[in-house]
Image 1 (cartoon, rainbow, N blue to C red):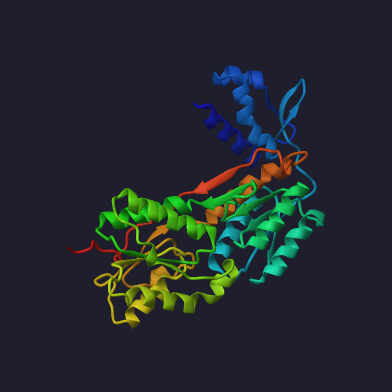
Image 2: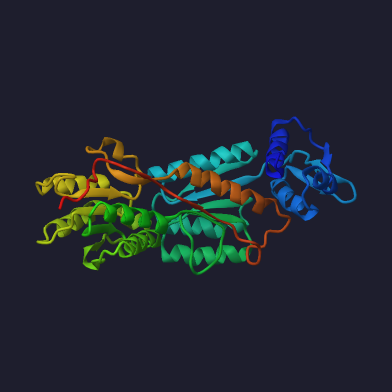
Amino acid sequence: MKSRDQIAELRTAIESGKLAPGEMVGTEFAFSQKWGIARNTVRRRIAPLIDEGLLERRPGKGLYVSAPNTVTRTVQVVVPDLSWTHVVRIVRGAQEVGAQRGLHTQVYDAHGQIGLDLEMLRRLPDGPTDGAIVVSLHHRRFTEVLVELKATGYPFVLVDQRLHDIEVPTVEIDNYGGGYVVGQKLAEMGHHRVGFLGPMSLQVVADRMNGFRDATLDAGVLFDRSLVVDLGGDGVADWLNTRLEATQDGVNELLRRPDRPTAIFDGSGDVAPLIYRAVQQLGLRIPEDVSVVSFDDSAKFSQFLEPPVAQLKHSWDYLGRAAMEVLVPLMNRSKYDGVKGEIEHRVISPAWEPGASLHPRLK
């Protein structure tokens, strides 16, 4: 059996109580002999269990199951707005892992107000919590406060964004890769004029557009930038509050062109239902007159669309679970070095889900 499997079994035995607190599990030398790998490799494989507080190393003796911590640690989850479905799913994923690790998880809802969100972030280092999961607002002021938070050494993980100016632990979707997949699919199906809709001030949306553009060019198809419609908004909260009118105008702008696109890509992942309605109000049909593709159905509206929308899918719950898994080792370090420590980035790849809203372009 591989050493990684042995580590997984060891973790299960500790978490299930099969191995009691204070019980010796072995030495690095003994594991090296048993698994047939170098001692340094054993040390690396064991390190996550120590970081998570499951094992402790006693110099000159070996590895022991850690005694239960009598003080319950608290993780603060800071979210822009709990009325957004994808945010609720991130929180639930984080709470699931937190409960498994014996952590108390509390949630701060800024109700879409950036000032409240930023004030909470500034208070974290002086508050009673031991670490935080921060769901991105995709706003320049938000980034500035994260720079300040990192400098304090307070352990936190950023969800749904990777910053380009500073290095902090992150869990994000592969936005560029997802956009590239959509570009490939559309090019393969003969769609050479595709409208892209999205709030371009959000870096995640810009990354999706860049992936889509590169896939189009790699397929030998000219990329028409005039078909990219910026739906506006200054940060995610502003965008979500104004998307209805912006989407209607954007679809009308594209489909009233004499050289209208044969397909529309919802790069935001939030407005496929609004695109459907705008298309139908123009007297057009999906997919006979125009195909529709969405990056993701973050609000779970696609189940009500007819025909079913072609889209990329990923689990927002998984982003929350992964964020907690990244955060726990940071909190377990005796001193979290937020400036010089090794930074972990987890990237979740979305999967393509075909739908009847996308048909090959007839010649």
